[in-house]
Structures are given as structure tokens and as C-alpha cells.
Length: 281
Ligand code: C2E
Ligand code: MG
Ligand code: MG
Ligand code: MG
Image 1 (cartoon, rainbow, N blue to C red):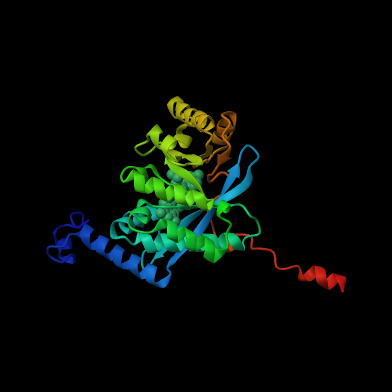
Image 2: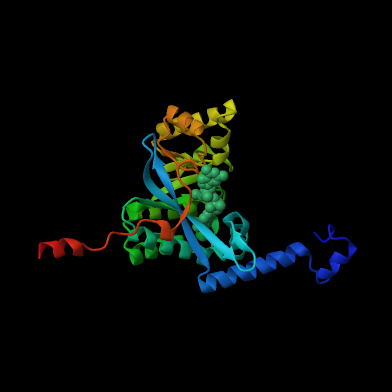
């Protein structure tokens, strides 16, 4: 940017500190402040059983309105939160808030929460999930935890043990964004997954690209063979939904079916049956 602005623009920056570094520092400061002051929100995107299109759960998605900047998507700040360790308090807040919100809803569908590698490596994820479940009273079988292939790259024995402990609580585990990372079929065999989520990139191309369609088909077959549920991410068109139904995909998520919505837009738990006792008296 300094280059775009011509020679004079360079004066904007302190000598010796480049723009990227300054921006990074400012982002970290703003993240710390948000952690301290409860500056995050959660949105919830419905998950649908297919082909019925019935809501079978919700995925919690982190939202942050950055002071002076406005809405800032998770992909813009989670990497820095991971590097700085701020992901540990942020992730703990997400787990507590998502479990608490899910208990307050009128239905008892599952709630999916994304976990980052830093929550396993720097934090005590097993204790954090246990406390979120205990404080909220959410039945563990309603909680699904989404991890990516990135988690499985190093320190696999420690990760395996933690995933097994989380599963022993009764939570289910999903492999998110499947196909985009360093996919290894060994992961699906060795780690205790209940579900594969096929990355949006394959779903969005499957209508135009026979290779993408073949990958989706193959992941669905793999799911059947390994007894794993499969969710298709990022379904945006009827064409994609029809193609997924034809391939026997059991669950889908995407803007076609339902967008993420704020916690206040979710149906609250019905009030205690005061009305019923009133009519009886
Ligand atoms: P993800 O877990 O794969 O979540 C799905 C992302 O795809 C979400 O983006 C969602 O809004 C978006 N999406 C859903 N349907 C469609 C669609 O039909 N079309 C398109 N174009 N996009 C769709 P979002 O909320 O920006 O989150 C991006 C990523 O950030 C997530 O990907 C997840 O990896 C991460 N993330 C979000 N919330 C959390 C969190 O609480 N903790 C952690 N550790 N990571 C999170
Ligand atoms: Mg996810
Ligand atoms: Mg995903
Ligand atoms: Mg994705």
C-alpha cells in the first residue's frame, strides 16, 4: 500500500516497522481486547438431513465486529489467534457459549463446534469441553466437534488420546474440510471419526467438473465403507442438491438450505406451561 500511495505514503509508518507487522500488531491488540471484554458473537448455520431437508443440527460460527473496521471473518483472525495462543480463551468462550445457547433452544438437535489445533496443543481441550458440558447441562451426545486434517499432522499420539477422551464423553467427532488438507486415508482409519465433511470446493465444482463429482462420489463411498456419516458443505444450488441426493449424501449444509443466523434469531425454549395450568383452574 505504501508503494501505491507514492513516495510520501511511506512517512505514515514508523521507521523499521513494516506495514504488515504494524497491522498484525494492531489485530493482536484488538483480539486481546475482544477476549477481555467478550467482543465475540456466534452465528448458527443449520445442517440438513437429505433428501428430506429437515434440520438435524447447527454449526456454531464465530463472528467478530472489529472496532473501527467492522465485521471481520474468522479466516482473517483465527490464524493470528492460533499463532499467539489467543485461540485458547477464544475457543473456550465458543464452547461455553455454543453449549449454553443450544440448551436454550426449543429443539434438541446437535450443535457442531469447530476446534483449532492450538486448542489441543496449547490448551487443555478435554477439560474445556468437560466444563462447557457441565456448566451448560448439554447432553454430550448433542455436541459434535469439528477438526481439520491439520490437527493430525504432528504429535498424533497426544491428539489421538484427546479425541478418544472427548468421544468417551459421548461427543461425536467430524473431519472438516475433507479433501483440502494433507488427506490421508490412514487418518480416517486410525482416528475415531464419526463424520466426514466434504469441502465446499468439491461441492461447488461438481456440477461442472466430472473430476470434482467423482471425488464427492468417492468420499460418499468411503463413508459408507467405513461407517462414517458424510456431510456436503457449501450447497448453493438446486443442481448441487439434486446431484448430492442422487449420490446418496445423507447431510448437507449451505446457503441454498440455510444461512448462518444470529443466536437471537434462533427459536428459544418454550416457556414453562403456565398457560396450561391457567386454563385448568
Ligand atoms: P468451516 O468450519 O468449514 O465452516 C463453514 C464456512 O462456510 C463458514 O464460513 C460458513 O459461513 C461458510 N458457508 C456455509 N455455507 C456456505 C455456502 O453455501 N457458500 C459459501 N460460499 N460459504 C458457505 P465462516 O463462518 O466464514 O468460517 C470460516 C472458517 O472459520 C470455518 O470453516 C472454520 O474453519 C473457521 N471457524 C469458524 N468459527 C470458528 C470457531 O468458533 N472456532 C474455530 N477454531 N474456527 C472457526
Ligand atoms: Mg466446520
Ligand atoms: Mg468446513
Ligand atoms: Mg470449508
